[in-house]
Image (cartoon, rainbow, N blue to C red; front, side, top):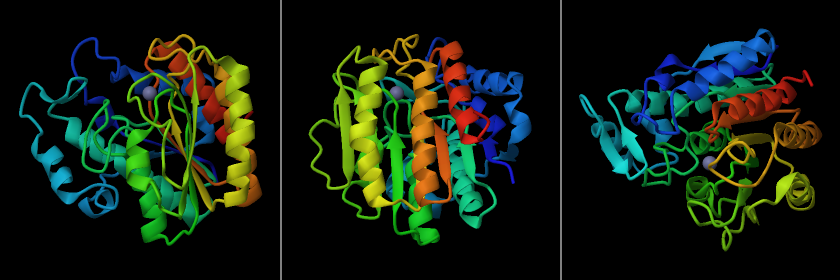
Length: 308
Ligand SMILES: [Zn+2]
């Protein structure tokens, strides 16, 4: 069986206005690069289903879910925060994005599908249990994690987040759940200005200063993430794959290159092979300059599908 590539055309109908960096073209750029490199031939393609209320409610309050779905404008935009707006297609895109993680979870746990890449938007890792923010509405990866725990009964699930911004929403939803280990790395001093002083018992947060570069990034992962992951022995690994730490992406200043995303994916694959038959589910988060986004995501997917 081949790894899964899960996306949906609805995810490209959500947009937040001209010149907004979280733009529909992001998914097309990734798809085109995967196609050009021949990698799509090595993945099974799935159209993401819509997440159900019950699936979302494992990660979000029901009043919050309904407030988002009921805020969908008939035309124009409904502003959720200064950077985050809904157009008439946003609710459907957000349900597809969360549904992709549910489907990936079902496929990988059923066996046969070793890994999955969910190329979806809107992203999710800033969405808290009851709060949309930072381009995010529903926390896609948290919906997937909770589906693995509550529906499939897994006991130990790891969530990795290498987006340049701290995944405050994932931490808000999953903090202190002993079934979850969340390992994140992010640039300090950046939105959402959290993560450095977490008191949660299940978080391995590594904040790196601006211009840390490849070596510091790799050292931090080697010394902080890998021992924690090996001690936890996850049954399934999720990845919040944000590529906005790339040096050509002006959202952050970590100074990473696509070889770093290839490197970290290889380390995670090794952990997955040691503990969970190589089972990894990756979900797109940030990455806003199209060329480095596409190159970085392709380097990541190439390792996921074992073509490196
Ligand atoms: Zn980000």
